[in-house]
Length: 263
Image (cartoon, rainbow, N blue to C red; front, top):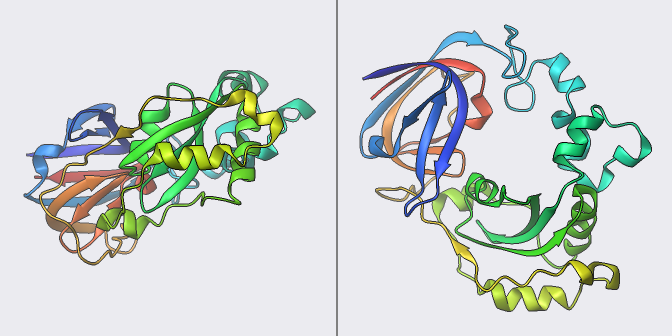
């Protein structure tokens, strides 16, 4: 069967294992059933901005044209550095967007993907965030009123726990399970006084199981710009990656690319 369209990324159902669907032109195609099969993904030479639909030659920030990259609030630097949020200075790219996405409750969390990391996400968006990062275990440790405060707390806690994921180790499944409740108590001991009011004591963490038939031994990334056709046996799906026998493909990276997928 063939599927053609512009890549719009993965959507998930949080079951065991996680159920993945790939969005092409708005159609959500179940892809767990592809595992074990040889899949062919071919680019068709068309790239469109995922926001405005402009025809472009390259994307910025996983799918945007350059004007949308420089204009839209979701592409501002404060999205990746939330402690530098400038909404309160009156310089937000879109104050209404800021009200809806940043001036709302956020979680600061601990997640286990390649190792333990600290991160943040909007409240009620945590499952999507954790699965997109390939976390096998995660728990929120604080609920704060704004993204900026979450970013400030996250930045402070990087003294004690990492805030980055080693994507190669994550995809290879080289993860040592950790008792996040025990670690959480240790982290709480480092909370500055002004953040202790935001402490969140969930009873248990969440575990995630990803669909896979076998583990990849060596991680090599496919690049659709240099290799417009990928044909390989699909071993699994984790985070935002298709894991093939001979390489991995970050589907988020190629949002906006028109492809033909044959299964």
